Amino acid sequence: MLDYVSGQIAELSPTRTVIDNHGLGYSLEISLQTYEALEGKREATIYIQSQLNQRDGTQVDYGFASKDERELFRLITGVSGMGAASARMILSSMTSAELEQAILSENVSALKSVKGIGLKSAQRIILELKDKIAKGEGVSSDALFQSESNAAADEAASALQMLGFTKANIQKAIQAILKANPRASVEQIIKSALQML
Figure 1 (cartoon, one colour):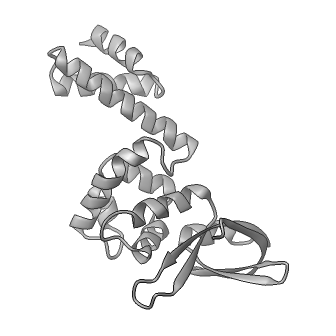
Figure 2 (tube, helix red, strand yellow):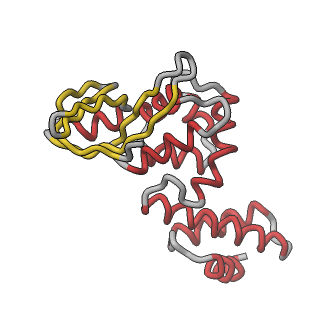
């Protein structure tokens, strides 16, 4: 199985590219996100994910301009009921960072705005992928720091709740702490929150 291909961009359209590598043309299905990343370039390295077409049993190769986008494609196609076409539609409708943020913030409306994604599909994507993305699967380093602070905030919030503070007060305190220090650790959040509550 191919992991990536580097070469000249022989053809490029919003849904497909052909990469010429020493006389071999690799035809790859792409998202609009990848198209925008490749537009205007002469050469590229494309990360590949092969999928079996359930209808006719043929193999389709999908190409991505970044490993992050490919990992998100893998995560989405791993959600029950989500196929490669739906994953490509989602990645064409929002950037990787927007998708990660929509899932982490449980923004069902953002996912529902994608053509072909209904309420149940959006809820399933959030339910099945939120923890994976929070742990850093398919996430760039910036989003990883963001999700780390979310995980720290969740842990601190449950500790503060056990101490008897109300959810509303805890949330206000944690939001203020993370605004001042987005990369605060669990201990730092709890100490600062205890001073504020």
